[in-house]
Image 1 (tube, one colour):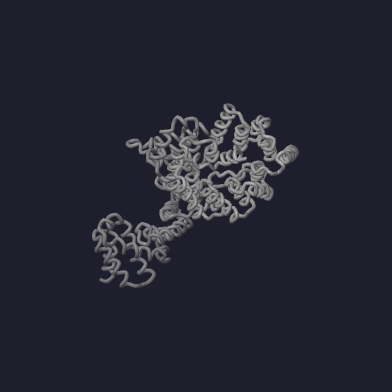
Image 2: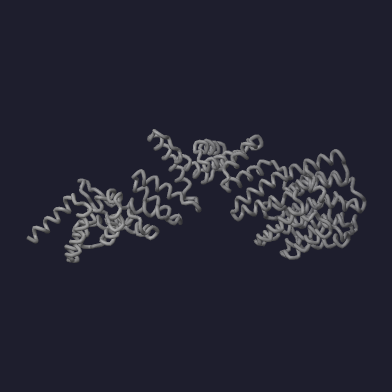
Length: 570
């Protein structure tokens, strides 16, 4: 009996000594989700040392890997070696049918097993109870049954309680009882059972990880982290806890911690599977540790060579490193090798890389790369819900003086739920302002009052975010001025407060006065005309004329106004 229980502890993944072995054993490999490696070890052992337990372990490995057909082959080989009262491999055959939801084959086998063991063998009861949990498998924080159709929490608890009654000091049974109670939506009892497993001698790391998993499922992430760390304190070589911590921190967007624990997981587990190494590189990319991501891929190039995803991650990382040519090379290679795996982020990073190319001394090459960049960004923009790529596209069109495209792009941004920032608002206003000046078929100026109104509205919002930015205020004034013929614009007075504010902002700054000379003269002429035609406030009119002449004594228009005023007085 003790022999069977010792073997039970082995296959239940609970041996403290095994967990500390530098080279992972089959049980540890299964606990890490490395089922291919585990089954290779177990089948090799069964061939080299055939026995009832060795054949069962080989079948169990395939069962945990989700391959009941392969499991049944090994169980069947072991049936002739079963002891009379311990039909271990026949139990394996029965549960291989059970997890396939093949009740017609499972029930007679279970009945035969129960008859042979007289329903009193703890190992057999345990194995049947475990099968009814569907084999909970931790993966990226989730703990889900490998075989959902096999789950029957009530039966699992019944069989496992019977097993516990016959072997009261078996921590493996307590562990799986915890799983069964979790499936029965009783997390409190599940945690209690896991704690009992620790008290009965199980490696605490294994049980603490399970408790952490339970808290994760309940969204109590602080307690999940606390228990994963307890697992590591209990056994610093217990790799699954590092992996769970890495995935948990990834879930809550704490990428630096995710990357750190991912490194520790790889170091402790020696897990060199391509998917693990790619995950590690991905976490470092998300943590903005771009060089580390590139180095990880380069140092594992032999292992990763067949997976095109490496080109994606490395391309994105080079984009973050401001090495656009390498980014373009890698992402383009990925697009060629895996067109069916393309996602909008690939176009985003490719577009940003093309826009980042300098091409010094060659305006034509720069224009080509910019155009390609915008083409790719336009593919990505509708699908990116976190980053407003439309802003970058509009910036390009605005600087290229393609104002209709700039306006259309920013309209698209709004329709996709992106909130415009102050620069977007300014560009939207300025592009509409520019489009307000139209020419008819004869070349005559036609004012588009709608465009000027849109310009003023956008610039008003921009001014709220940046109240003293002189260009915003100036073009609010000009939008309200040029929307109408000159005299009508003066009589409406809509430009007046903005011209006044603009003058106040720049009149005391020599560099700004020189930069905005023509606009300042327009502002003074407008205010002089307003007080002459609308307010009839001759003192205010004289004051604005005096200020204008003081700043621009050589200006002919202001001088002419002053001269006409003198003539009238004479």
